[in-house]
Amino acid sequence: MYELIPVAEAPELDAEAEQRFVEEWPEFIFHDEVVSQYRDRRRSYFADWEFYLVDDTRRLIGGCWGVPLPWDGTVADLPGGFTDSLARSVDSYEAGLTPNTFVLMAAAVRNDEQGKGHASRVITAVKQQALSRGLAQMIAPVRPTLKSSYPLTDIAEFMTWTRDDGLPLDPWLRTHIRLGATLLAPAPTSQTITGTIPDWESWTGLAFPSTGTYVIPQGLTTLAIDKASNTGLYTEPNIWMRHA
Image (cartoon, rainbow, N blue to C red; front, top):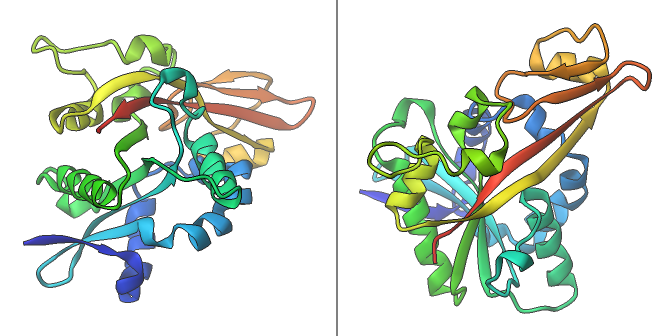
């Protein structure tokens, strides 16, 4: 038996969750300066939208979090991506606007439990939570796992790639599709991450000896390095998917 429980109900799992789930993401993804401006308010306003997936012994299996926001259901009104969803949710809450949509911002399964259908359990359970709380729509700015193998390919083209059976080439997109999700639109500027050249060398383990464009480990697109200004710029693309 597996259960999706609020993070607040299991503080004893927090330290393990922080260690386990960080493993799933590249270091640079945690350095979006705009996200940091909203992080504390998001946690304050939407603490009840953070969850752990546990088994019947309360062993940590996976987790997810998201935010509620207003969305009119059209592609034109979609947030720009991950960062913009966070900003819209917080700004809308502070403006007193009523949300009608849940945005699944992140979902993860611990490394030693992957390949057992737990990601599907997390997504299905949090969708049920959203619907039961009166949010009629669930969308997600999905980070396709295979995209890092094709960093030079535009995200709009990548989202059209399919296997012979018609399902997406990307396995994480396939997981969502098999749960009834549909592809909505590319989010080419889902996150923007800037840092000094030493920052990027620390985050990636690479050296950047000259100005130019670089392929980086786990990057979904390329990194632009400017030696004159001592900066690196990376713009993370995602893919919008709709679950309900």
